[in-house]
Figure (tube, rainbow, N blue to C red):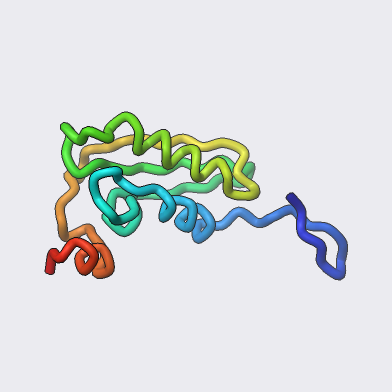
Length: 112
């Protein structure tokens, strides 16, 4: 989808903020907080061709959503204008802990 400007149509500019906004639509089914605010996203890389690579983790290796969360993240990112491809890699180093959660996530989960 292109946007019109006084100079003519331009392709959408893919930004990290756009990818983050997409990631904020993905929720762990067991936790009422999105994966970005939970601190599960460790890295976002965007290349010049519009390919996005995300490194994320899960709260535990035994997470019941281990199969679905990465594919949900990939599907959400794929909807961002300008994305030509997406890879979501689950990493375990460093291990996730509660200190990675945003203040909003802590408030939502009553974890001060």
